[in-house]
Length: 419
Ligand code: HEM
Image 1 (tube, rainbow, N blue to C red):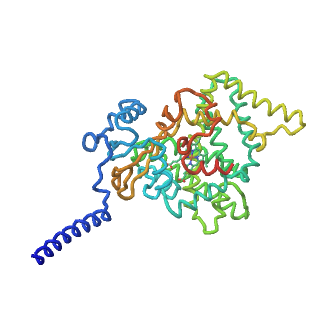
Image 2: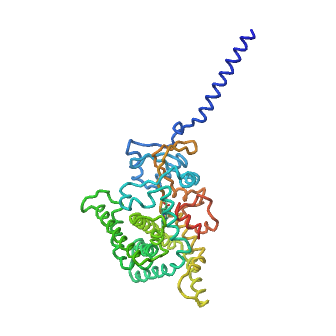
Image 3: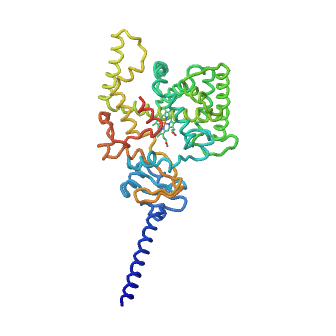
């Protein structure tokens, strides 16, 4: 009898052990593939939700999905399955804390046009090195002395508008292009300015064209202009080297790198930075003018702040030129810029691609899927920014909560924190 109970006990303990081992094994064999995909519909094969997105205002498309599915949902656009995210926590997850799990992704035609070695298309050491070199050219120490030159470009623009009706965005693009050339090449490359401008303008025209590289197409013209741009840049590089010029502008920063960038890498990144800097800044400047025009009391406050700086310089017998120190006395102007970046959210979202299966909040983001952090929706969330459609610079009197204000994401955030 005792023998039978012992056998029974042994049997019972073995079952328990098997069950325990199975659970432990399952626990350690966690496989994200077993998780559900985020809510949402992928629509028709290949076409997905592309027509829906393009047939309505994108804000309406995103807002309706967010209302239905909350801050993480899946959809399918332009032939790619995507996960859209619109909470500050999710944006931080994708862009900061787990940034290594998501790579930047662009259509191949854009890479060809800007240059495959430009910063946007990379991750890891090469990306980190480029970022350091770009930042080095834009930290306060490097740009302090250019404030008065930028002011004089602004004054020249104002003068050229006198007595004529202007297209604000086009004029802002000319202004920001001139400032970009100053920041990249200093004042020396005057010789090549017109050629640089001509080629860049052709390149830009073809950027959003169909990528068909046949004689006569916009894309083909752009690719030719891009080649010419690289040749002009090669001439500038060679004359700097011959004259042994050591400068602290962006070109100087790229050329001065000890580990050495190749001339092609320098060209791709110069073109890339002009591309990143020009239309974005021109667009924000245009929106600022619009919002100031619509809000006379804000315009009045900004005007008074600027006039105070001019008057105090006159009283102190200082030179009239704007200085770095003056730019620190513009809290109202600064808040107007911040509020414009929030309301206008000129880059509504960015693209990443999951490099492996990723788990987020109990959902699977499969390898190869695109992930789109929707900045505009974060900036227009009534929980984060009450009465979000209202242009109200005073809301920036208190610093926004972390990851809720993301107009720049990366490089410029690093710059702003160094100011
Ligand atoms: C108000 C104007 C601007 C806005 C709103 C803006 C916005 C952005 C955003 C959202 C990104 C991130 C894209 C992504 O990671 O997917 C980015 C990247 C970048 N921007 Fe800007 N930008 C502005 C002006 C500039 C200027 C003036 C420069 C000139 C130095 C610049 C240089 C860059 C570079 C080099 C990157 C790539 C950073 C990296 O990959 O680490 N941007 N910008």
